Length: 406
Image 1 (cartoon, rainbow, N blue to C red):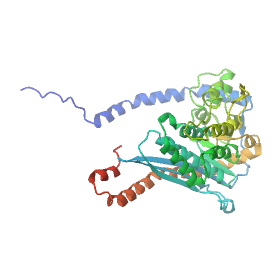
Image 2 (image 1 turned 90 degrees about the vertical axis):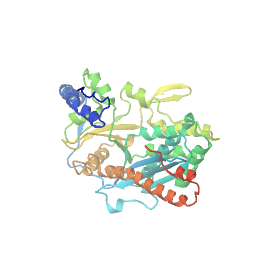
Image 3 (image 1 turned 180 degrees about the vertical axis):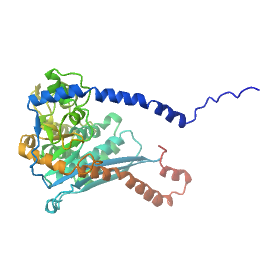
Image 4 (image 1 turned 135 degrees about the horizontal axis):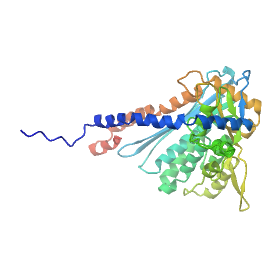
């Protein structure tokens, strides 16, 4: 009796998961080699930084500031069969220890929201993301709290706003520009040429700082550590300081772009250019260039390229022994005010209250609220479908109300 030939088909997803689990020991070994082999170089690197007086210690009696918020944004695009639904939000959340009399003023907005319908277009994500980041900046700049935390790095909203304004590369046309004008008018009673002012408000306000959850920057390692003759550290700055700093230690605030690599990758060439088909484009581009000039490390003066120090500073701070190090970006005026900067650090530490919440509480809660935007989109979809279903008497047209499968 002939044996049955083995089936050529895999048992999915079981076989795939089995192969993934079989690779776990190799993955663990790779992580051990990456992290464990760094102990010696990290110790040498920290010693070099201390010799340069770049490591500071937060005084235990430092008084914290009781007026703090964080802002975050969320955006989602639902690609229905006939059109795209766009929804973007930004929310601001106060800290646990904020005083009642240091809260939201009557003119400030705790949240912003914008939604619209557009035809299918490859440029649509650029518009939705750009609107979200403009709303984040609006919430931060409009608040009156003494500390306002931007989620991420300062250059992130600049990149996304640049992407929104340069969307003609993806054939953004009249409908795109109309939607952008409608967003600014409905949300802020503003026009496209007002965008540089919105950016300047965020880049020049010393109350607005930024805390990045994730950062691949090696600005300090590639400059102050490598320049001391210490090689072999394959980590990023944030991980290096998470392993190297003691509790309540922080790096002396430094201007961004300490290393040639960081300047080249980000700060020398950071720009915002509009290529949309609008009559005010030339004046807008000049205003945009002036708006971001304070954070740049290279500028053009009378046709010549000149190096300059950015007015944006950064530091790494580790509040607790068993916690992460935080990359904190701030403006020059705050960085050069040693007492004021330490009060900001003490305020951040006061808001990190639970081991599973590894960031200041208002930043954590703002992130949760912003991510809940998807639930709002589902409600929006249902409302649209129920309202239009009775009016669309053709089954062919009714199908246009349903989403593509993801």
